[in-house]
Length: 211
Image (cartoon, rainbow, N blue to C red):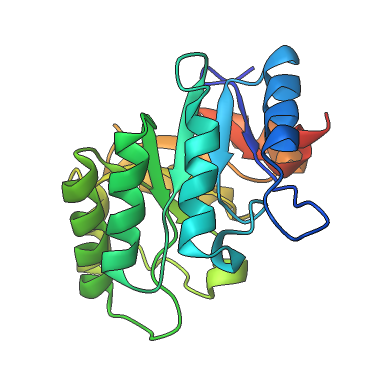
């Protein structure tokens, strides 16, 4: 078992009127806790992140915040616009979330310097380092660890760790070499042994919703 344990990449249940079903959300949280989950990763890929309205996303944070004293909560705040990500980060921190995560901004093909500025802004708003959500199969943004701005970003303090949903586990090791203080979470449960061998601190996974 990794030292940080297992975190559920939480799903979002909707009722027949296409509204978030708060009671079922609570049932899923309580089941996860009963089965030993260390916490939850909220509004990530399994949590409909970019499909939710801003109001739905913040409402989801509100429901999960009811459990902030019993587990560790990650709020995924990634967005196309920096100000939107900052808004989510501020809301999550005010609700008691202990960790903030974000995908890099999408669509416009930002420079690595602009991406670093995005994470700086989120970290400033949250008052803590942000977990870089590395999922290139969805963001279509691969890390270039030879790029000076990218290397500086991971060493700057604005990045607290990484959710590494990438089968290149050697990349996770190289990230740790840039900043030994980074927390590294694996995102592919079927590769858990390999991730552990490379020194990851825990796992965040969608299959933890049911096992």
